[in-house]
Each structure stands twice: as C-alpha cells, then as structure tokens.
Length: 360
Image (cartoon, rainbow, N blue to C red):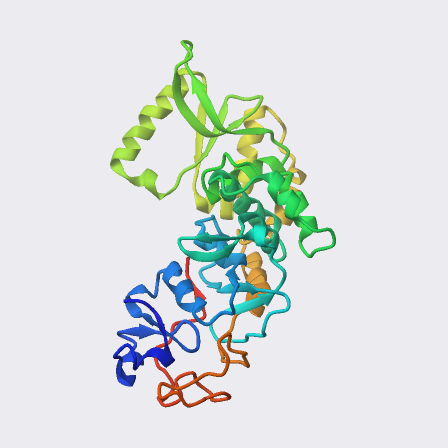
C-alpha cells in the first residue's frame, strides 16, 4: 500500500472514516495519508511527504544524513527538512520545513529512491547547527561509508556561510577509520587532550601475521584504548574478547576498554589512564579543550538542549500558509478548497497524525 494525497482518497476507494483511522493511516504532512505500518520508516515517510513538496525539492540537512545512515548526535528526535529552489513557491506546512536555497544540480541525488542533497552539501548544512564534536563524528561516518571525501566537502564550502568556521576546524580532526560515534568520541577525547593516536591499529606477531585490530593505539606507549559497546556483554563475544586480549598481551600491548558512561561521566579518568601509559604527570589543564567542546556538543546535557533550541526553527507542528505545487487544492468532488483549513475539508480534522519530528 502506497501513500496518497487526501484528494485522491475516493478514487482509491478509501472512505473518510478509514483515512482518519490512526490504526490504518498516519499523516506526516498536511494533505497526505501514509500507511500506519510504515510510520517508523523514514524512507516511506519522506516519499509520502514528497507528494506535497514543490517540483525539484530534495531532502537535506538532518533528514538526508539519517537517510544515509550516518552517526548522528545524541538526540531522540529530528525534524524533517527539505530544500526547494531559491525562487520556488513558498511552502509552510505541518510536518516538514522547506528551506528555499540554491542546491546546484550536481548536489542533487537519490537515496533509496528519495531525492536528497549530496553528502558534501548535507555536511555543509549540518555545520550551521552542529557543535564541533558532533560535526566531526557525522563526517567520520560519511568518510567511513565512502559517501564523500574531505576534498569534496572543502570544494562545497562557501566563504562567509554560517558554520564554515566550525567546519574548517572539524575537517582538521576527522578520520574515516572510526567505526562508530562513540569510537570517534574516544579518539577526540585523546586528541583534544594532546595525545597522538592511530585508529584501527593493526597488531601483528613476530611472523608478520595480523592477530588483532584495535580501535586506538596510543602512540609512544603500549596502550590500546577501545570502546566497548553493548555487544561485548554477549557470552560468545566475551569469550572472543578474552582470546583477543591474550593475543594483545603476547605482543606486549595492554588493552583498556571503555564504555559510554565513562566517556559521559568520567572522561578525566580516561585521560589519566593515558597519562599513566605515557609516563606523564597528571595535568588537569590538559583536558580544557575537551571540556570546552563537550559542553557545546550532545555528549553533554547542555549541548543536547542547545542543539534542540537551534533545530526548533525547523519543527512545524501547525499548518501554515502554503502555495500548493499543483495549484489550488481541490476536494474529492473536484470543487476548489483553496484557503480551507484542511486538505481534506469535507472530513472532520484528521486524528492520529504522526509527530512532526522523527526518531532515528
């Protein structure tokens, strides 16, 4: 079952009661019915919303990043953001924010059949709102998935555009060898605290055979630092971890595994571990740069709240004025309903609509 415009309901054989029944349909944007069974599918939701977007519009910003499966900051909900031509019709509709901007033809593409801005253009837009640590992590994921390159991002940047300064700083810190958001955070904690590290360090025995690959090798030491996710609690994974730790120990390497709560709550202990591994005295000011950036990023509650405030402008929870890309709205009988409060005016207000921000 596909999504459809409310004005096409009768032609498809759907009654008013069926369309407004939340068990059967949700309404991610005014004027469109989407099967409730696909409400949690971002691709299906974007395809539904696209029915009401101007010709040539593409999804961009956080929506394009989520469609690509990039590692996003620690937020539960994200607004749906699209971009139309700079001189396109104005569209202010519940459920989607449409930016009017010139996205060059070379920066328009498709992901799973959904029109989106290019990876490089998406990153430039995210830089307008993301803090440094979050921006580095999302670029790490784009590089890791080979969706773009640093050179392509630099070529897309425009002098004077909002966010370009933080983007320049981020590009000096990115590394596509990271394999998760938390792994990027662990690397950044070390780097911003002044420790040189090598991501995805290959450990070989005396015969030159690879015995392990480590998240981070703290250079000038025998320390391996790694992020341990929830999968490490699995019994079989735990057994593999023990064998791996022994293999590392046989090569003179010491492994320290860290979990998310340590990165969130006790990053100072991770830095002290690195100091001990390097034989350095404890120096509290070493972490100042990390603290300054973490306060702004979603690894802190303050950073999460700040990003929500910055994204609030993209949230559309009420119907606004719009210029329909297909001209005046019409009811199922063909009568014009331009100016009516609903794109399905012959029905009572639709119930059970989806929220205007989607989870990952």
